[in-house]
Amino acid sequence: MVATRTVLRCCAAFLLTALAFGAFAQERYPSRPIEVVVPWGPGGGSDQTARRLAQHLESALKVSLPVVNVPGASGLTGVTKIFNAPADGYTIGVTGDIYAPMGAPGAKYKLADFIPLAIVISQPGAFFTAQDSRFKTWADFEKEARAKPGALKIAFVGFNSIDEIHINNLIAKGIRVTAVPFAKPGERYASVLGGHADLVYEQAGDVRSFLTGKQLRALLSISEKRQAAFADVPTAREVGIDITVPQFRWVFMRGGTDPKRAEVVAATIARYASTPDYKKYLEEEWADPESFVPMAEAPKRFQQSLEALRREATAAGMKTAQ
Image 1 (spheres, rainbow, N blue to C red):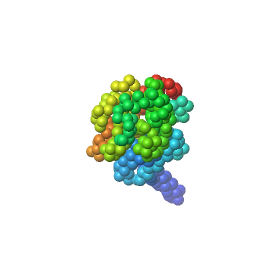
Image 2: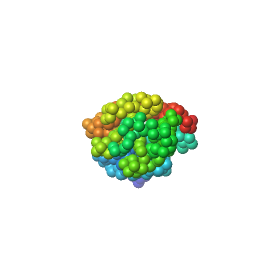
Image 3: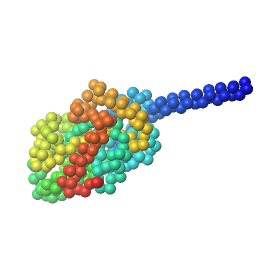
């Protein structure tokens, strides 16, 4: 009997130890590096956002967050990499596009497939030209584009992107340009600076160094109102083109990830959004000072943006996912 009680005590002690260890293992997240996938090339807005955010998260979460650039197919190559990874919270995405994976014809994903952790930055876009370009104003560019259909080129990120929607709205208004895709930001910028393209579509903060360095200048702003960084440049609406949807960058995990793990990262991002460094980051990027959207509110904002992009795409004669 004594031996039996001893065995039972040992078994009970072992079980309690195992349960305690299991609970500890569950709570201890993260315990190894979290890979940050950027579905675009290095140097662009999503890449800049990811690296700034990773630096803060490493300090807060006490693990490394290596940033991996996976450009291609308007961001879909990188998104696919994330969805091919285990849903364990150790792979997150930072991207600036929702239309290609969710809104374009034949879109592979739906909003329900993602766990948005936060929208971290929102920026209006613009069309930029080289500083020494012959186009001094948007009117100059539009006049030549109408006179020489297809002759002028605009560099952009890729098909089924917000960039293409904006460009196709120009074409629908008779400003017949040729859109040239470059998945890598450096190639887009070089195409304009080297005279291989006439304009590039981008967010002002992403090319701030080129603007302050007098290498690029804006011709047309895609925004509700004129941008402070170039207040003399008209908005698209002012010239009769109704495109205003801004670009935002967001952080996400794939669906199926433990919600508690998603909340750990989301809460850490939210804390960062209240810091002076984050506010400084928005100022440096000429971004909306109210950019941050927390996890609980992000899905609604996504749906609103998708609907707005679908309206713009339809106005440009593009088909959209239903």
